[in-house]
Picture 1 (cartoon, helix red, strand yellow):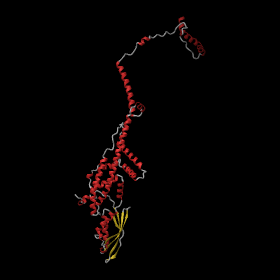
Picture 2: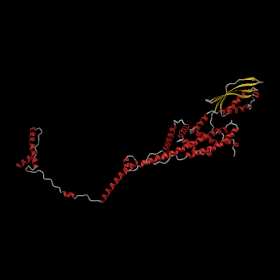
Picture 3: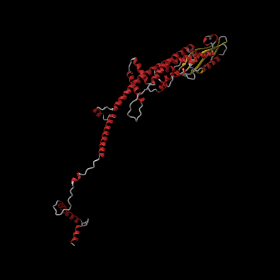
Picture 4: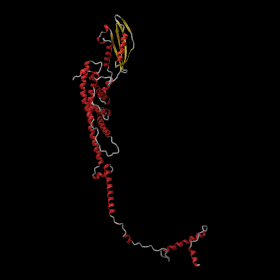
Amino acid sequence: MPEKAKSNAAQPQPVNPLDVKGQEKKKKEEPGLIEGIVSTETGEGGQQLLEEAPEVDVSLLKEIAPPKSILLLILKVLFAIVAVASFASYIFFTSQLTDRFDFIASKFGIPNISKELKSSNNEVKTLKTNVNFYRYLQIKGFLDEFSFHGDSYLQNFEIAGSQTAENADKKEAVDELVMLRDNLRENFMSIKDKIVQDFTAPLIILDQENEIDLNGIFEQQLISKLRKRAESLEDSTDPQAKREYKNYTQTINLIGNTEFRNLIVQTDFDALSERDLYLLIKKLNDVVVNDLSIIQETKEARVKWSDIINEIELRTIAVDSYYSENFYEEIGGIRYISYDFDITGPSISIIGETKRFDTTNFTMIANLIDELNRSPMFKNAEMRSFTKSGSTETGYTASLNLNLDLQMNEISMEDENIPLEEFPEFVEE
């Protein structure tokens, strides 16, 4: 019975949450319980609740160590070497290929390869630009000579093929063509020899991912050099400086002129006929700008009134065989009083008169109009008015008032004869 009571006393009693007085009583009893536990731990109590902690033999831990391995040692050494080498490589290549560690490279006197390559590339570009500079000035000089002789060649070619020129003038023109062709060939071959030379030079490029336009690089270098030279002379009043300024600015137009280069490179001068050479000169005048080409362009735009008058006279002789022999008063014919030129048309108005003793004035005028319209120089020839007066004894006189439109067609390969073939008797063996 006492043991049962003891066990019941050891078990916790249920707590009634509604028993407020009982809870307050329990809280008053708890400090005594805590004091009893503390006194027991400190030895003040009569009974120890926990056993003492076991002691650890530290000497046993000293004998525990990982087994020694040569392979592991080698791997450690290799890893350390690789790590150091990687770091050193990173520092080296970064300092050589960039300017990130310039302070380290300069401190230890280590040259920067990227800067040396850049300096070498700049030196190559400078030297090649200087070569191109003088080479293109030579091309410009030879081209000016070619244009000078070409201008004379065009004039003589047109005289030799003209329908209105005298035979003596044609013979002289053909002789000039033979001489001018030799001069033109010399200039042309000099231009060709210079222009086919390499325009660029190889550069060391570190960035291989992006394509480098070497031709564009050297073109820009040369244009900048020519432009600087020209700008230094732009405001000068010295005549020689003005000529040099114009020379530099016109040379810039040759750089990158693909049409000009292809025309020179792809042309076999010795295989050109007289007509082909004539057309080549005109083509070069179109694609190249210099003083002579500008003058030639102006000449091409002007109306050659002397040739027009000669053509009118030739067509008139076909209708009136006595036109140029001054027999107008005795036997009649055609006589011109004045010409009125209109460049805006272009057109020409002719005022004159016809004289016939057989009253066929109108027929003569109609024949003249037909003959003028057959000319390659004229079109739309027409008679503005017609009046006639006179008698059989004194002759019948009719007024003449013609209006002609001019055909300003350039010489074509189909229409223009080759002078040396048209006048073989003028060419000496």
